[in-house]
Length: 274
Image (cartoon, rainbow, N blue to C red; front, side):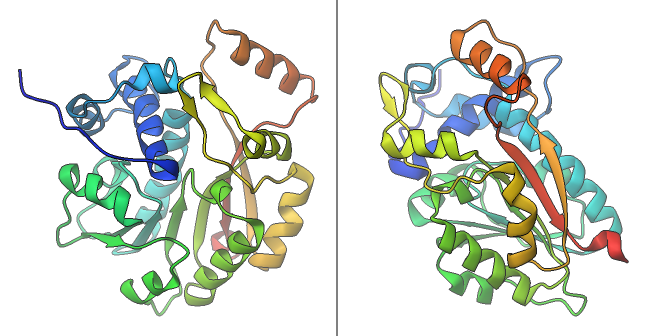
């Protein structure tokens, strides 16, 4: 049996193993939301106790990936040779699920994450790994401009780890360079943000990093108009495969009666205007 790799990740970069854990479970299921042999290969190559730290896998991140995949495939069909920017890329293998032979892909993440990523997802001519934080805006100098102002920017599982002022500034800087960009990202409700800031143990062995940015659903469209004027907002709700545990049951019951707000996946785009 081949020896597994030991990875050294802490803080927010360690959460890339949490999302890998959930995506890999979906990828191995016959009824999974994604099909991804590379994701499974990476998951099985890393010596890490996923269940001890993160608990049993759930469908959340596989569903999120499937929704972004769907929008991205449609965008690639409309934008031949387009630019895709993946902020907080981690170990997401989306390029290999959706890219055609013309798209140019830029994966951006901090050095700690990129050291691990490049073991399994090495760069090549059409897939460039940019070793920078999303908040180090010099990454914008590493991606080319387009005359039509188009780009597809994916920020899965990223913005909640920033403060609101940084989220605003990041989006404004992106759309200043790509005024016709499509932005896809997920948001968490304020109640969950507050819980993580106070200290939220995913399990008794793993404390989630604080997620200081949460937003109420009613505030999303005004927020979008401020940071990306004229963009249409599309809402996508998470599909949590039912699991027999108290946390999932309570969440489903409370959200179904609108007693708590759920996390959401959002797309901001001006493509519908053309």
